[in-house]
Length: 321
Image (cartoon, rainbow, N blue to C red; front, side, top):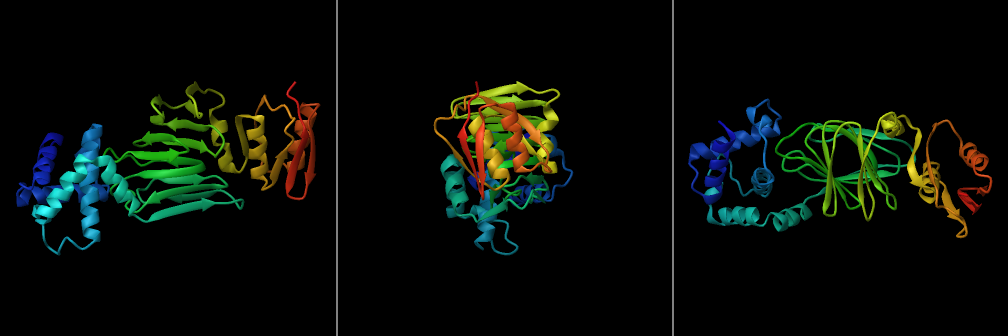
């Protein structure tokens, strides 16, 4: 069966005129997809509209099964007028329907704290490494009816390919979309979001602007702009945090100091008179102490004055000049 034949059956099913055999074909199709079977449709190229049709069919089917509307051994549930009407309404109003459906689902939250980096596998088989002080949220049905995530912090992903349900990460106003690849997303509050691609292809969207990244490329999304960079020697630096090292990816000085303080679980106070117009970039070993890093900054910048108290870093003065 080719893509057009399957889409035709799906169209008939939405109108309530699909035969018993056609309904069984649809059920078999989606059951095999859920089992990640090596079927020919994994190689199809789908438009956004086609992908949404598949996603909404799966979501409606899962939702009805969950609420016990689908009785055992019945394959005619979509013939019921109320269900047919509901499915058509959802498919005509994808944004609103998907919103209310996702709001009714239970959320799974994975957290990492100062204790260390956390690695785990998502329900779709994709693997994630979550940096310290980061969190990842996803709704019930992840891997079956959707692959949408919310990230606060930093994570490295190795994504299982799925043509029907793209892997989508929302992080502080930036959306990262992939089908199957490996990449890093850095998105702590108050900092620009940085997406770095190791393998595959990634689309990054901020407001009304999008860029497509290939291996060795990086996108930097701020509140007002979205830029694309070509990385060469510096590519691997973006992944070193997985070994426990502290990576500062060319941040404004106040952001860099905040990252250092967070890494060592310290509070940070900066004198408002300090000049923080320069940037800091570098990799600090996990074996370096906080005192070592601050002393190194003082050695590099003559006007860098600080106090290190219990649980707090106080920057008394600093000048980039």
